[in-house]
Image: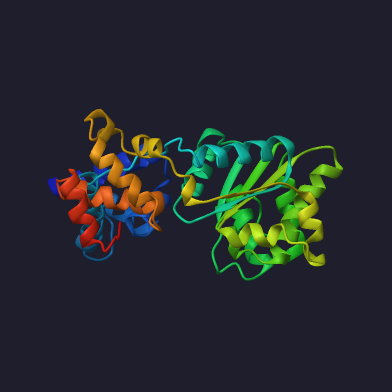
Amino acid sequence: MHTPKQQELLAKVEQLKREKKYSQNEVAKVIGISGTALSQVKNECYPADPQSVFDTIANYFSVKEKARLTYTEIDYAPTSVSTKIYDIINVCQVKGGLAAAAGDAGISKTKAAQKFVKDHPTNSILITVNSCFTSIKSLLKIIAERIGASAERSRDELWFSIVKKLSDGMILIFDEAQHLTLKDIEVLRIFSDYFNDKGQTLGICFIGNIETLTRIGSKKAEFAQIANRTKQRKLYLKSEIQRDDIKKLFPILESENKEKEIDFLFQVAQTEQALRGTVNLFSNAYDNKNYSYNGLVAMAKFMDIAV
């Protein structure tokens, strides 16, 4: 028989399932236990002491409850840079082919991509690249996993599996694209060419640091096919951040007429911290219950942010 506390924890698990539309295995994985263990404790047939499972569940929700008490960043702000990157992604989807939006770290490139996928959930996919993608097959496997294509063993069968799952008018967005190799980019180009040959479109948009744009727009022979098919190449710098962007990111400051605080955060955004570092600074000051001008300055000093 479950104790009242255990019943409460299981109710929270069910609520999380409903809110996130998770399967039982998915919700168990998020919490940090196996789907089998969750099923067994629910049905009171766990072969060992179930308290360890309930402790894991309790610890998970404890962390989440504490997180809810901290500053919550707004999902998306239409800043001067993020709106331009959003537009590049949009045009890439409409026209197909390749596009690249690159620039300084922390200027809302990823936020723009996330917003676009949220607005176009049925025909856009965002994949964050990392240095583990050292082979074409590893890249194909992550694409297949994201679009629900069958994970074939051979590289050519995997490629065809992905092609069959993709459709006219889709766009694949690759964040942190500086990690992609030349061969990776070539494979992605061929996906786009495949649809173009059929009179259809598939957009491939690369988002990353300045190196991304340098390589994709290179005049070297080995990059010629890529450069010729890249319809947009845009570079954005932190110097383009505007004071109004601070107001959009922190509406609480504008509503409270904290002009001095907005000016200070704008100064921070002009440094290497950019917008991401500015959000981190404000978040820490807010959680410290002092986001006044003096509170922001003190937190900047604590975080070793030079303004």
